[in-house]
Amino acid sequence: MSLMEEINNRALALGIPLSVHFDLTYRCNERCEHCYLDHDDKGELSTSEVHDLIGQLAGAGVFFLTLSGGEPLLRDDCFDIIETARSYQLNVKLKTNGILIREAEARRLRALGVEQVQISVYSHRPEVHDGITKVPGSLQRTLNSIRFLKSQGLKVTIANVMMRKNLQDSDRVHDLAKELGVNFTVDPTITPRMDGNTDLLRLRIPSEDLKNVFQNSRLVGNVEEFCAPPKPVDDSIQEGLPCSAGHTMCYISPYGDLFPCVQFPLPSGNIRLEKFSDIWRNSQQLREVRSIHARDLPVCSSCSHLGTCTRCPGLAYMEGNMRGHSTADCEKSLARTGIVPASMLLQPMMEQNLNFRVFPPTP
Image 1 (cartoon, rainbow, N blue to C red):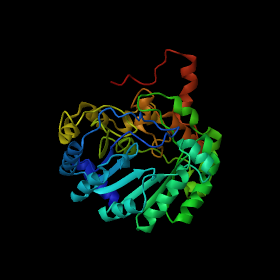
Image 2: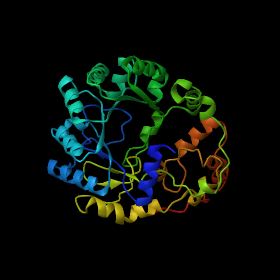
Image 3: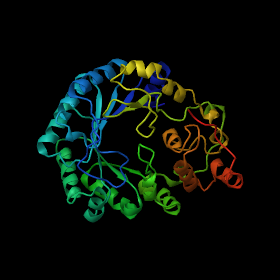
Image 4: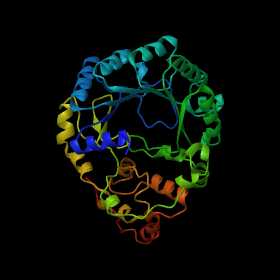
């Protein structure tokens, strides 16, 4: 067992919120066509409220803090917020598009001891990257910021979100990451907007192309292992938890709303009305999330992919039921292994009987 696995297990046993993802703002200087956020400011937490919240997080046992947005550096107090988080010895990761990072900002991030900076790069081609961000020149400015950060010795990760428009460019973005000496991650998941609007799903790459992605060792590593058939489901898998959302991690919006995860928009409390620890311990919604084990999933519990599926309860929730399946993850399991998931086997039955309900309604 790795050290991180041991830490996570201890946090789970003790009910400690080990990790928090906190969006400082939904405002942004880009308008990425796949973004799931509303960029209007509807009353962000003030500087004093954020500083108080960070103290509460530290007091509750939070160690990993991801600061994101929107574009977090649009807040004039962003560096002060990072400094406060570091004063509590929190491990800080910053997600940014990098447009506002120049040499001075890179030096400040290094001086503050930020653990890692993640920056999205959608293509090596300016016409594609800038077409997605809707900001002319954004690719060059983003790459310049990566170079500034690297010059200060900071850990940088390029995140490549795959969609129809940039599907063919991931290999070249991977090459670009190697040239720059930074880490690289790829994600073919496009999520609905946080208000439930599913228009963005049209950007998802087709299933056939997803198979090709999963056969690309440069993107997934060991293809034979990654695409191996699922192992038999045993009792330990049935007793497992769907994911860490609401168990050892949560998400906080710029307005103080708390959710199990950034991809799980189940309103669970607001830190302007209650202390963070009180929400974490007593929220009825979080208790509901924590009550669900793999065995409690009506369809997924009988699926051969149960132990290896990337099923996201948040995406399932946005489809109507947190105990249901996530269509996107079922498609990934099929594309990865060639084995049909249980949800797809049931689909013909559902189409034949419009009154057939697979899942009970979720509160």
